[in-house]
Image (cartoon, rainbow, N blue to C red; front, side, top):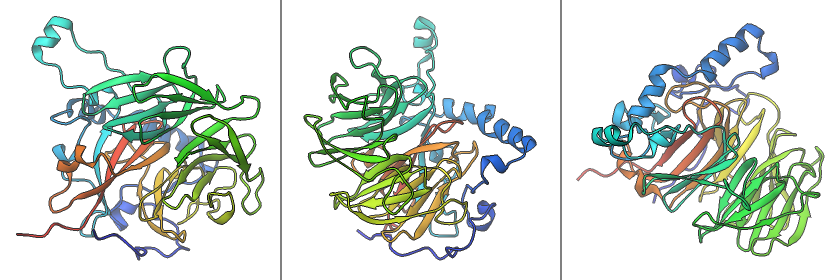
Length: 404
């Protein structure tokens, strides 16, 4: 399999990201200034644009639940690619979800007549997400549950609705190979564990000593970021016993201010997004500092509110910036390769993005949506807390298929 290596030579690292990238680079997205620097009039316009989706966008998402779950732009218009032609595309928007109507099979006329129209449940305010065994798990911080969108069964289940496993504010979820779900809840101040059938098993963490946010699994360990202590906590994933903590609150090398999310690569290294210091910090499995990059700003390689992070098998790092409303992709040395997304309500746009997840095991669910001449190597899922595109599913495109 060919892999994508090297930097894309569009902008040097000292150039600001373009404010009209659809004209300059073929992207759909841009970086915006800090909210505090935007005038009151401009804020009103932004709210109207981003928080009130147009009727056309809503209708398109509801109606377009066709043969496969999720609104698929490829079924409606030309494939949405990043960057846009004539540049060689690397990513494609495959599907978008805003409610359970995008998962369920469409009602027949007879069913509507007999039982009435099905009530649509909107995805509220999603943050962390994961996909496992054909199911997308979404932490809905507004509803206080984890939505389990079963794409194969065309069903939706609510995890954490009932005692003793009731959730209050789930923010992130990690799924082990056997389907066990680990959900961090900042109001409960615990990590809640459920089996693959969404039955509550146990809870980890002392609420007096932990305010969990990011969660990630590596081997027998569960890594959790502690928002209050500015640390990464290492737990035994079976017993919940605390093994160690590393880092400390601060802004010095290796320190963490507000560690929001984390991801683990194939070598066991940890990447922690730090909202407090506007950077990503990389540790080895023992908690030793390896590198860090990023600073406050809207230029290439800078962040304003770095949140979700993920790493693919080639070591490329994906970082969500909730303020800039893009996902930036970096190589192993921290050099920017590509960014995608952008503020808005158009297909592929983002509105306060929060979580990102990478998956290689469920590609078959979306394989037939690949643009002609391309194959999907893996999936990239991104959550947005506002707007019509609550969950966007993108595909990383492989090389063009050979012509017979």
